[in-house]
Each structure stands twice: as structure tokens, then as C-alpha cells.
Length: 116
Image 1 (tube, rainbow, N blue to C red):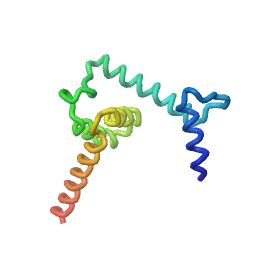
Image 2: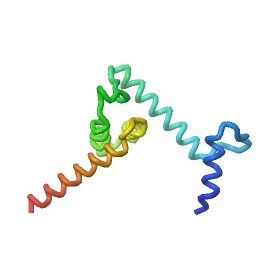
Image 3: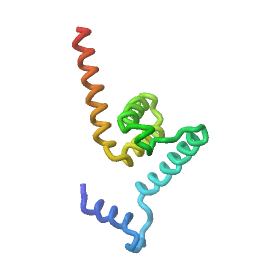
Image 4: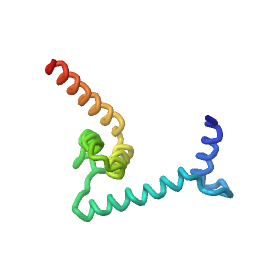
């Protein structure tokens, strides 16, 4: 795989001073369409009274990580992406996800051992 080409394309897509004399890549178009779906879902949830993900006093990163992991089996990629975005935007989000995932893995392993 030619990663140099990928890095060059990425640099062009994020550098506002680079002239864009090329067709948008299908990756970029897909991300744009997905972002529209994410924003629509976020707006719907705001209208239902949901808020606070961006305020550490109202919502911990660990809670967001729990929600993310709980939503994976439900199968809605937009919900999963929105929760991943929330963790991405919060300081400590990556560490919280790793911590919660490690805790759940340990709980699963203990459960397996106790049931044998």
C-alpha cells in the first residue's frame, strides 16, 4: 500500500491554503455524508433534552465510554460514532475507554473462570 500517496492526499484535504484541483475522494465524501447523519442524530437528541456530554461536571469520560461499549451490540453506527466523537473531544477520553474496556474484559474473564 502506498502510504505516501495517502499522506499527500490527506495533507491536501486538510490544508486550506493548498489549491484543490482534484475530485473529492470517496473517503471524504463518505465522511461528509456520515457527519450529516451524526449531526441529525445529535440534533434529535438535543431536542429530546439530552445535553452535557462536553461538561465534565455533568458527564464523566468513563460514563461516555460505558455508553459507547453498551451501544456496540445495538448496531447503530451513527450512535457509536457520536459517542466515539464525544470521547475524542474530551481530554482523557482515550484513557477512559481503555480503562472501561479493560475492566469489562477482566469481569468477563472472572465470569468465565467462576462458571467452569
